[in-house]
Image (cartoon, rainbow, N blue to C red; front, side, top):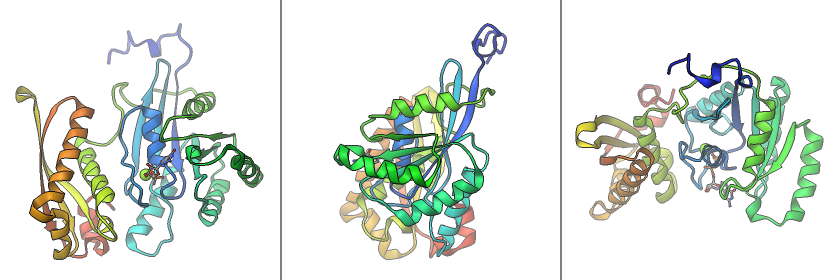
Amino acid sequence: MDTDTDPHRSGTQAAFRSGFVAIIGAPNVGKSTLLNQLLGEKVAITTPKPQTTRRQIRGILTGNNFQIVFVDTPGIHDPKRPLNRILVHWATQAVKDVDAILFVVDVTCRRRGQEFAILDLLRKIRRPVILILNKIDRVAKETLLPLINELKDAYPFEAIIPVSARYGSGTDYVLDEILRMLPEGPQFYDGTIITDQSRENLAAEFIREKIFLFAHQEIPYSTAVEVEDFKDDPGRHIIRIMAVIYVERPSQKGIIIGKGGHFLKKIGVLVRQELESLWGRKVYLDIRVKVLKEWSKNKQALRRLGLM
Ligand SMILES: Nc1nc2c(ncn2[C@@H]2O[C@H](COP(=O)(O)OP(=O)(O)O)[C@@H](O)[C@H]2O)c(=O)[nH]1
Ligand SMILES: [Mg+2]
């Protein structure tokens, strides 16, 4: 970008404002849905089952004189399994150096234990916090007031905003409130970038999302996805992706492939369509399934899959 002609840096404009905003809350409250809604693009996967966002994802919203870098966090969990320990670590990491925090609570399903654990963390780090009451499309308005009163007494929030992240109601107020709090600062990312994830990672995440949507019980938690090869061939207007779904046991492999390859095919078609619409390009997607024994308990495997 040519800085001399960049209006953001010219002295006649209002000062450029920027900052990092962490989105935290228990698993499944709608953090990733909120991020996508605030950005107007899908950069984070969302599923009906908890614990789906394993890595920290940044979503970037750039305006004429501001840039907000959202940090979507994995849920905060009891550290029982090695994977859970990593999740806790990342959540704590994510709130460390941010300018503001969006603390999301699901009004249809309170999880007081987890909420109090998070409030304890917030008290220690002393950053401005906006309380987001999400999924208000599912409850009657009258149920919100007692909830607001309870949480208002539990922590000095900068603002309390009821929203429906899925349908986008109330999310404009969230942006207004963040902009009000945003300090003067530089533009961290090029204005055209909406996420810090590579296209390889996005493709892997979209595949994982479909497994969470369509596979049952322990299967989603036993799978990891890796993009082995990614070729962008602008001359032929096509992006070629080779991906592998790792499972922990041979029996799980059969389930992911499905009868006559049906399950795998369904995933492939949906992911290809989503990637094509996000990138505005044709995508060729090849997905294989491999067994990597007990990968979620194996440090070496976790490291290789970028989960540690
Ligand atoms: N009805 C309703 N469902 C929502 C809303 N926001 C999220 N969800 C659903 O809640 C589930 C969990 O959302 P997700 O964003 O993955 O939660 P996360 O784990 O906190 O990131 C998904 O099935 C979403 O579609 C909302 O505003 N209303
Ligand atoms: Mg999420």
